[in-house]
Image 1 (spheres, helix red, strand yellow):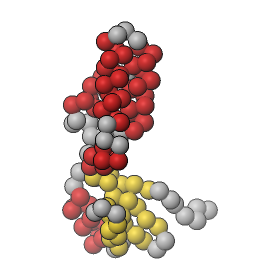
Image 2 (cartoon, one colour):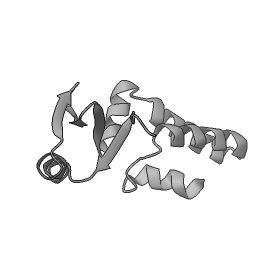
Image 3 (cartoon, one colour):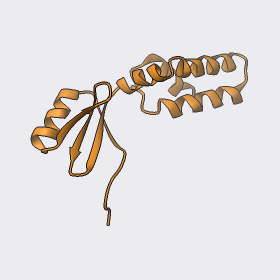
Image 4 (spheres, one colour):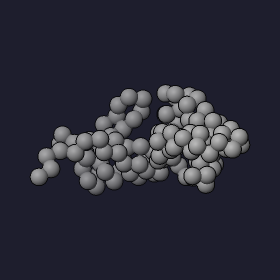
Length: 114
């Protein structure tokens, strides 16, 4: 029997509609924390709400150059013919932004490459 779920995340493109559904229809409580982040609470459980694309902006705030530096490294390695280094940089980039918004041009680039 499952006694508890932890670290659940719901990603949406329609924040207000999602909040309305989970609070009004399902009766969950809205919890605001941090810098405008929200979660739904029910009993002792919590589901964090992420907006598609916004979490990646947050990642850049925490480590402003990390993802773009990895992309630059992957591009440079590809141009130099070093497929192994390019693959490592792309793999690290995918770990960081594995849920990236598919509409972002350089995310499409990474998907096409690997």
